[in-house]
Image (cartoon, rainbow, N blue to C red; front, side):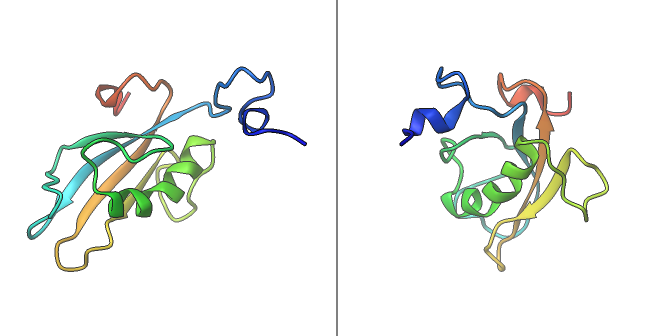
Length: 112
């Protein structure tokens, strides 16, 4: 039987097998966002909800971020390294652009 650490990486060193980082940037916000997200906010997407990010938005973004993190693409998106995803609040929509970046040192690398 393998443990959780065995499932993370071949060398059992606890390093993630992902080759990319995914950054979420707010590109549109209408109405009154209860989490106070504003255009330009950025978050590095990982396994846990980023500090300051609405958990409902994170739950919505996470499956799309996983595709990008592990080298996949969403066939309806014209840019293979990006996806646009809206939070689930229909009255106050916040639209995020997810972007795959090569290094995960922080949101400032968005667009590199």
